[in-house]
Image (cartoon, rainbow, N blue to C red; front, side, top):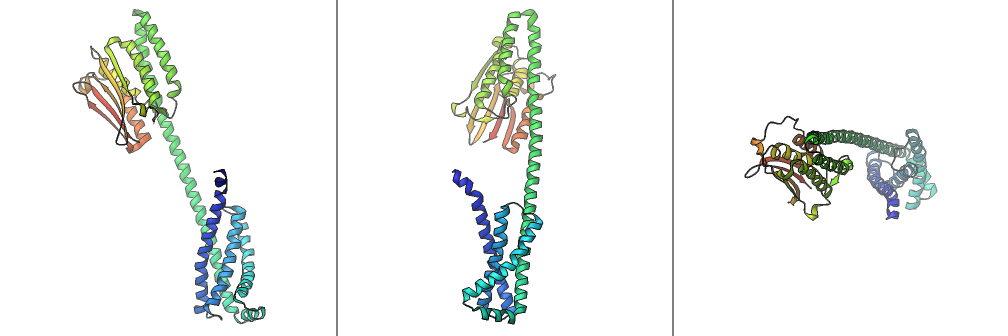
Length: 357
């Protein structure tokens, strides 16, 4: 595996070099056609094609091979690359003609005679070949440069968007704890005078809960197992406050325990159910938190038997709980997540999150 990873850049260079050589052969064919049938130079099409292939292939090998050896996949320095082309073209012309003559079995004297009698065709062929090579490599490097710039700009935009999203999520997440702490401390203040022992027990539960949530509430991800553990601690704290008026059930299948979700996603809904549904109800009620998988989607449900959507008193708060969940789902999942708030039967509210996995 290590050897394969180390050779990956080399194989990438060889693949690109092979593609460039293949493209060069197409232009070699065009140049041979031009010299034979347009310029009407001496020699048959086959002879001109061999000369074109030898010169063009060597030119591409010198220029493209040199570039890949010296600079790899990076954009080469402009003037150094131009110098490489200037040096490579005459060398390719000289060596390519010699190689073609050797391949065709043309004696040196005949080759010299062919050169002197076919000067115009040679000049035109060499000029066309040179122009093509310069244009090909220059335009391709320019395109590669523009592509790299576009990718860099796309990466910068993605980074900025991610930073903005993280800032938004941190702001939304930070709203949860003050909301919960305000309600708990207000109740704790009232209990201190009338029931010190119960107040002490509530304070102990609050400390335990805050210790459990200190790291989780600042993390980007948590698991359903950790989330349900925090909910158990939170509901235990609320049960100290409400006594027998509060009952709760947590239903988490073993297979879903390691599943990753955003932290503190369900706690605002549980708090909302207690504050607006169960706490104002004289006899209290039951709250059930359930996780299940259905058709490749994760369903998280917070169900209560409280006063319901119509029976709950008007809130004196800011509606942080439900709005927070909606905003976080929209920021994290977009259209892949849904949130619904519906009446329960015979009474209460069902809050449900559905996330495509």
